Structure formats: structure tokens, C-alpha cells
Image (tube, rainbow, N blue to C red; front, side, top):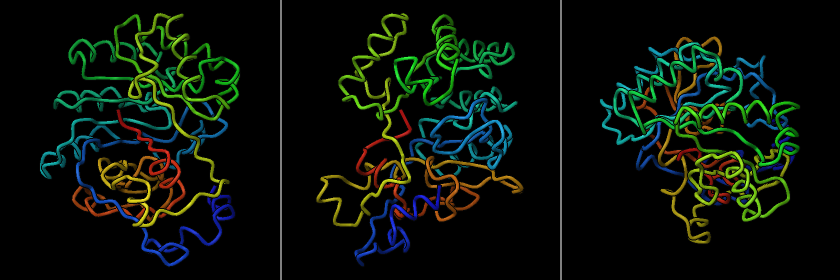
Length: 316
């Protein structure tokens, strides 16, 4: 992936402080930390055609976090006075982590809103996990949301990304969440040659047919992500771009969030600037939230295409 990015953007994204033409590179300060993400591990029950973090049944580059490690960072939120409202869990597939229910309860019991990104397939449908989710939803009604990855509202295109049989299994998981009254949203992709209006209309029909209480027109309930193609050339973001694009650093995801991961072989977790750049060492900010309070230079194609130009965010 890095080799493809380098070829597509030859000469760019080299110096963290200066772009290829010598202009000052844009940076983003952590101005309003609202979301702390935990990557529970890169292992996943499926291998998608274009997974931004290369999750698979074999990729354990990011190993399972422990519930005790999550608790440590929840303590740090309080000690640092971060105004966090939401704790996010992503992977891999979070429900493969054996301590995921304990992690969710640790966050919920402190009053945080909790968002879990899942494919809603077999790991979530194990009886132990189902029982845990039902219990948490009963105790912390309205605090927990599961965002289901449904790449397209049709079986054919969803399975083009996630493999044969995946659509039906995800639909089964969504139906179970619906029947349990567990709040559910959807994340799709915008790579299928249709307009956003067409995509949202398609999701609206799908939701209605399956009696899913999800608003296809609400960008927080039906999130449509731009593709992060490392082979496509993208512009660098300079300090002048804020005025040109009529945007502000505060609008970018790294102004409001950080992500905790644990690398294979590491003694302790580390904090990253972004949920999308788990393998790039320049976005590793330190082991603590205090260290992670420093500014982030937008020195990667994903910063430009996904966040600044695409206007996307992984949070609610």
C-alpha cells in the first residue's frame, strides 16, 4: 500500500512541515477532543477487497486490546479534562476481541456514548456476545450504537467488496439488532458510480423493506464514505487551502479525536492521530493522552482526500 501511494504521489508527502512546492503544510491542533477510539485488533472474520486497514483472519499487526488497557485511557480522559462524549470501538471486527463486552461496559458505566463499528456477522451473533449486548442495552438504554458496514444497499455490490454470502449474514445480524431494540446505523461506500442522492434513495428503500429504523437522509445514521484509493494522485493541503476551500482546521477529524492501538510485540498501547492511518509511524503521538495533545501535520493522501476534501468523519 505504501509503495502504491508513493508512486501515485511521487515527491509529495515527504516533509511533514513543507509540501513538495515549498509551501507550509497545513496542521491541525486538538482543539475539542470529543471522541476517543480504540482499535480492538486488526483480526477480522472476513477479508474485504479494499479494507483501509487490511483487516483479515490472519492480520494481527494490531493485537487485541485488553479491557484493563481501555480502562487506563478512560482514566486519562478524566485526569486530562478532555470533554469526550463518545468512545468508539473499531477493528478488525471488534466482536472478535474476547473482552469487547467488558470494554463496552467500562465506557458505558462512565456515562460515555459508545459507538461500535461492526460487520454484524458471526462474531457478533455468538450467544455470549448477544447476551452481553442485550444486557448492556437494557442497563444503558440509548447510550450504545452499532454502526453496521453495509457497503451497498444491493447484494451484488456489497458482496463485490465483502465476498459471497456476506450480504445475507449481515442482514441477519441487522434483523437481530432491530428485534432487540439495539440502536443501529449504517456505513456505506460511494464508489459505485451513483450519485449520493441515488445511493441514499436506494438505502431508504432497503431500510423500509426490512423495517429498519434508520434514516437514509441523515448523514449520521447513513454514513457514506469516500474510497481511500492509495493509487490515486491527490493534492497536498497547505495553510492557504483553509481559505481557498472555506474550511477550518477545527473541521478535520484529528481536531476532535484520537485512536488507541496496540502493535504486535509492543509492551503497551500507543495513541495515534487518526483512525485511518494505523501503520504510518509519523502519526504515532505517544503512549498517553497527554503526549497525544500535540498538533498533527496533514502529511498523507488520506488527510487530503478523505478528511479535508471529502469532509468525512468516522464519528457520529
